[in-house]
Length: 102
Image 1 (cartoon, rainbow, N blue to C red):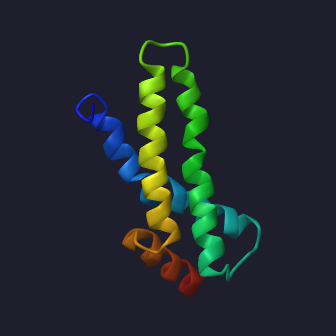
Image 2 (cartoon, rainbow, N blue to C red; image 1 turned 45 degrees about the vertical axis):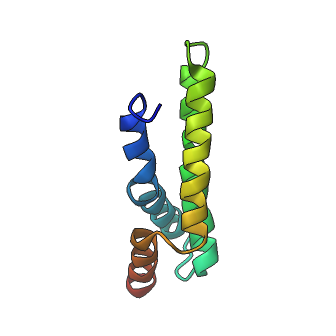
């Protein structure tokens, strides 16, 4: 099954770095929150990551949607756990950078 969703697997693995972090940074800047806690920052990154599930609904009605949804849900769960437990180095680095430069 992983070969079938190879591109999506790569995208989900980079979702925190390439989508969650930039949007979280923008969110905190626009809300004038200069020093969010590390947990608050991680939660916001995850919130943006989980927004992908809305995009996934565009596949609804296609053959194999249920398998695709299961795959994405499992991948997202794994990636979210890594972010929330501080195991995504890119997220942690970007948090430090945000705090230093805001």
